[in-house]
Image 1 (cartoon, rainbow, N blue to C red):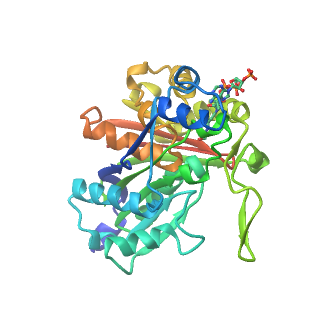
Image 2: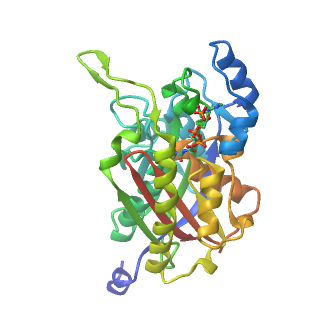
Length: 332
Ligand code: UT7
């Protein structure tokens, strides 16, 4: 590299996207029938009206997050035209890792048949993918990495309490991935991350492993209304902060991809940002809430359907347990 090159600004761009959904598709009616066997009442009508969810996918019992991540990664690498051994950084965002350790990123690295590059997990629940993208962007800009594989992968079906109708109808499994590459033109324009640990209790899976046993409650618990209220406020604020940082305005956003948890929160955010609803990418109806996988799954679906095209400006927004939230603005 010449001296002039080393002074040139360095940015991160999306080179390709990929995603994977496990085969088992579970409709609201399927789920209602399953819960009814335990005397628990729910209905397609309630789930659609309150959340917008119509179906979700569940992984097989022997399919861990790293396997879903592998399928999504292969698709992203192929779309990017990048070979696995060109990757010099792997970040996996997950709250449902295969093991306590090693990281799901190291397990993915092994499955990809590569070795040597940095690989680690990011745990920020449903904000995990925007956290992971922000870290990868910083590492590319600093020169620490040149081609990064950033993945969101989850098997939330493993931590759902199927006796709790207020949560088990909401979540699904899946994975999404992007390959980021160093570039002399901006791709990722700006990002901002937040957390507020005062709200750890409103969305948590508070179990742990100790002395060879699971201690505490190993299933997801959520105060849905508390999460809803916080989410609506922070999503608007962080989107505006990121637009400010990038020197852009709402009118510059071609597509909004908020975390896919509830259509009412997503549409509320679009309205607050004065965006027409046809700029909102919606996959929550078919995927449910796949936590850290929801944003890259939605991004890949929109890219592959031809909705999002090269050159479009996309706002990604995560929000979830921790409490965590954040946004990334990028030119594709
Ligand atoms: O991924 C991180 C981000 N997570 C989120 O963004 C989730 C945010 N929260 C939400 O999306 C919503 O709060 C929920 C979808 C979880 C709940 O919607 P809601 O409109 O806040 O409903 P609610 O909790 O106020 O419950 C209304 C009623 C209750 O009955 P009563 O007390 O009014 O008789 C619930 O017991 O609906 C009942 N209910 C159900 N009924 C049928 C709750 N879950 C169900 C269900 N089926 N699955």
